[in-house]
Image (cartoon, rainbow, N blue to C red; front, top):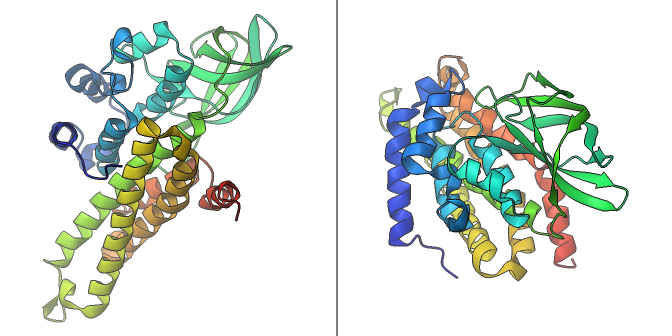
Length: 340
């Protein structure tokens, strides 16, 4: 088991970090999804094709490399459909589908994944999906559907007849969701879904993003504590602030170890993945929110203003905490897996 990044993974991190620092700074994040940034993310870095097999035009990397990239996109609160496309790609690599994977690797489409079950009558699909991540920006929806013979995975063009998308008001203003209604929408059957593994890999991917949110929030408040003066002293010199920062750092360190382990398990030891993935969301989801919350509190009054960036981290952390189910669900699953 390796919890330390390899030289290649470090280089990937540096490349993604340098790109995002200039292409998607926090002031720009407030304006929402920028298709040009997403196009450059794929054209210059090939991030959407990172885990796409080489025979489909991707880099053929593993979840460990994907986790590195997601940590960096999380740190800048990257708007747009990158995480949604990543979720869909994880599912498509396990089906798999050459046409969609090639299009994703080439950056020609953005995709999203629904976990809600649709109804398939042999020609079209019907059903309502209450919340679809990046549902307004995505081109293709990948979803499970029930037929008379069992379950299949289908792909639906979101611009097709019979598809109605409605943007939802969400807590996280940096990444949207949509309500999608499918009423006889044409689809393409991809094949039977894998028996297990998709959900676990989604949990690891999301935990990697949460790790990036935690790191960026902690770095920002540490820098602030070194320059903010209150009652004649830098606030970082006060014991209460030191204790809080130390607690945040410990949560970050623990989350990093868990994410690295879970990503390694996904690539190298699938038998350990269910427990590792459940642990990743059980811990990282709550820890990310707590770090973002304390990050906001330590700024004092200015942290509550719309002009400050603190609320952006807080909202992304809260939205991510429940995206794949609240931490208590993953704790319960972990206890069940460990037969506790």
